[in-house]
Image (tube, rainbow, N blue to C red; front, top):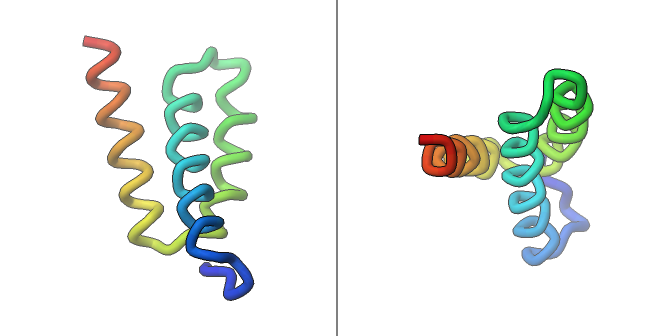
Length: 68
């Protein structure tokens, strides 16, 4: 869901934050993973479906690159 009061810069920051939170969820310990997922879910509600997919794709790409 896009927030009409967000500036373009705010939306970009939300997408970047979502990418980082998703990456942290992928790479963290089992004990911390639920926290990162919960935070990512909250940020995901602030971005468009396209931004959500980009974030997930990039986080997965980074995970694959860093964990070969």
